Amino acid sequence: MGMLIIIDQPPYGTWAGREALDMAFALAAFDQPTSLLFTGAGVNWLRKAQDTADIEQKSLEKNLAAAPIFGIEAILADRTACQRYNLNSEAMIDGVQLTNASADLLGQYSQTAFAG
Amino acid sequence: MNQLHTLHILNKTPDHPRFSECLGTLGPDDAVALTENGVLGLVASKALGLVQTYALESDLSARGLSDDNLEAATIDYSELVNLTLQAERVISW
Amino acid sequence: MTHSTPDSEKTSFTLVITGAPYSSQAPQTALSFAKATVAAGHTIDRVFLYGDGVHLASALVTAPSDETHWPKQWAAFLEEHEVPGVACIASALRRGLVDSHEQKRYQLGANNLLAPFAIAGLGEWVEGSIKSTRTIYFHAGA
Image 1 (cartoon, rainbow over the protein chains, first blue to last red):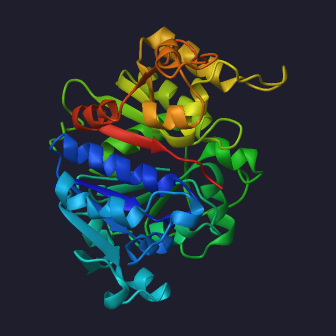
Image 2: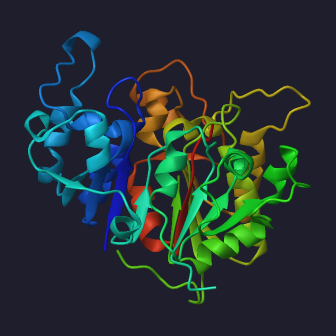
């Protein structure tokens, strides 16, 4: 049992996803077992080679790469959403587990939250 | 009714992506509590009704829906509070 | 993460508001929920404002006289029931919500945090989600 933070917002153009990542890192900093689930447009966080210099924002690919160091237990991605956004395993950052956002998955966590 | 597993509080219209995301994760012992614009799902979505569905009376009446013959049990805030405690877990979509 | 059961002696809630007043119904739904919670004899451990929800703690919100003033309604509720109201510091600073301490620290021209709200880190939310029987989120709808 632990906490699942769901990110269903795209990485850029909105801040809700970043604030979700901050929540996950805060939980992990207090030694709470925490996993991240990317679903819907949120799976676009997981694409390799994000170059954000020209939009003057921090690269979320780099932020997310710190997740295991912060103690995030698992980075999960909804299989159907990955297909919808044409994100195959070659285009995806390392360390992502494909899954299905379902009652069974959510049932494995004591709490599930969105950032907004 | 069975033990309530997860209470899904849904405040989005059926046109919001999270409405279908929510419906896609419903288990057989779950319930949905429609609040705010979630209550519009009762007139626009055929996918509701697979699990026990509740709707906030104040949000139904604000939207002119309280007299309709809807497939949901109408609740007030005190009943919503009780539902969050009866459920093993609560997810706000 | 351990959870106390609903039948334990003291049932408590943490409420998290992420939707802003006047652009979402979230603060209003959360206040009705909070009032029903205390009316049923339960405790609210804290109310945590996150993301756009921090706008609820602005002392500069000015509603037309015929509209409900949600920040003042919330402030009155928190005072009456002695519930701590906390705005996330990172969300608050980005959105121009500061208390006198942050005003000094960043040498800003003014502060605008409505009493009795306080500004603090996400640790307050983590503690609430561990300690409270239930943590309920109020997001913007649409």
